[in-house]
Length: 395
Ligand code: NAD
Image 1 (cartoon, rainbow, N blue to C red):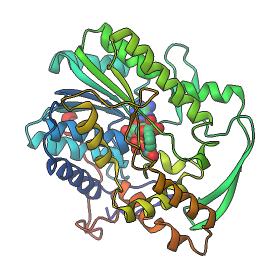
Image 2: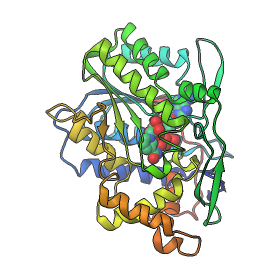
Image 3: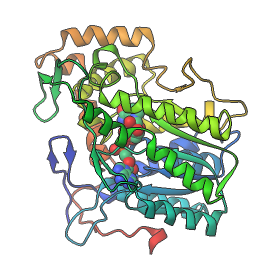
């Protein structure tokens, strides 16, 4: 099959196996080009390991610290006639390179929110690794079925208390228009917390603890975002922000139970991922931010961010450096005053006409396509390729 991108709004419904593999290999090469981690975890479980921040969180300890990894994700395998999802091909490529390097790597495809997935992963840890010493929780999902009540909860991206309108980028047409979003209901806040808060993170850690598969002194990290004031109503002060507050509460509860410096929330930079491209206003902010940070010479992608998270905080000789709310801040370069001032200035001026001059929308589009394995220089997209790629650990 010849595989080309098919974009529908903020999602691409096809993915290219060789392109995804090339992406994964370049992330691995980046990690290998850095000094080995000083004090790496050795047995790492990554929940949400197939794309974005979670994929990078699997690559960094594996190739920076020779860690054995178990990955959990929800992806679509390819068939003879239909391409799989990018996360599927990323995971196939990750396992292939890890196995070639002699590293243990197994993956689970299914619903991380379910009891069955937790039980399957625990069985495998018991059988193969004994215990894990680090658990990364990097899920981004629009819905969650809670196994305790069987209800399916949906998350929403809405402001709280008042309507929000702001400039917005139509990433299909390249037009700068505006978006107006009505405030959420109390029920929507509760449901968004159910999906994107820390309840399931705590359920994973509780299940792993009960099964006796957490090593002494284990650590766990989940990811959050804060961003600039102009997105506060839709992000930090909106429904998703409430869920992230809940996540911080879960970290505090786990530290209470297991001891300080066990559970961390890391605040990461805004980046093009499948999850962030679905958030109103954020793609315009990211396009402006990329331009400013590239010009400043401190732009990073997921792999650079997570390399820094492990090298400077989770896997160095000292303890992680925390802010006043006990969070790790790898969004520090994004939030620097000159960067934020330049973005705010461009935000005030940006229109459809000057978008390409003031922003890095072309970089945004390239990166969006790369998420699905398209636009890589070393891939010949005119060649036939087989969309059916088994996961090495499952075949
Ligand atoms: P992503 O969409 O790239 O990855 C989401 C992962 O979750 C994938 O591996 C997917 O397979 C998995 N997943 C989703 N539903 C699942 C389910 N039911 N069972 C098993 N796996 C499931 O997202 P991302 O942008 O890397 O986000 C990861 C975390 O980082 C989120 O908490 C997000 O809020 C946070 N974050 C993202 C950004 C950003 O700009 N992208 C910035 C800061 C923090």
